[in-house]
Image (cartoon, rainbow, N blue to C red; front, top):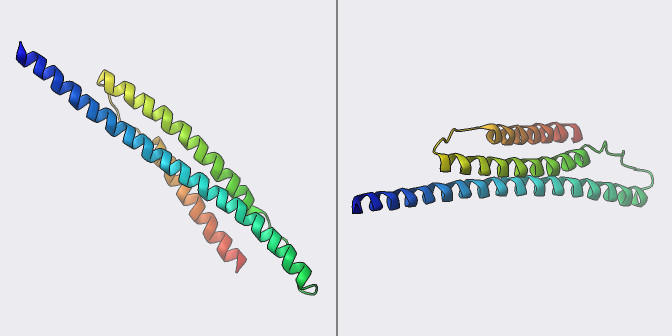
Length: 136
């Protein structure tokens, strides 16, 4: 009888550890989402800063006016904030799904968020390379 009770306690402790690992993974995804949204915010504000500086420099150097920017960084900044928000929502859905699977002992891996994060990083990297090549 004590063996059965001890076995159930051991299973509960193991189950708690798996749930805590799931929660740590969720929090890591949230940190990634916050990073993406912060980067989008910085890109957006940098576009505003560049517009203001071009106006100031345009007024200071009347003969040498800078050409207007295309506004790509504003679009990318807004996209990144929205994408980070969407990833946060998907991370929460995945967290709850995995939590249920752990309780039911039917866990299956999924790489949807991994692929989305990879796409975001590749998209931002490609955009920045093209933007820097175009601006020089």
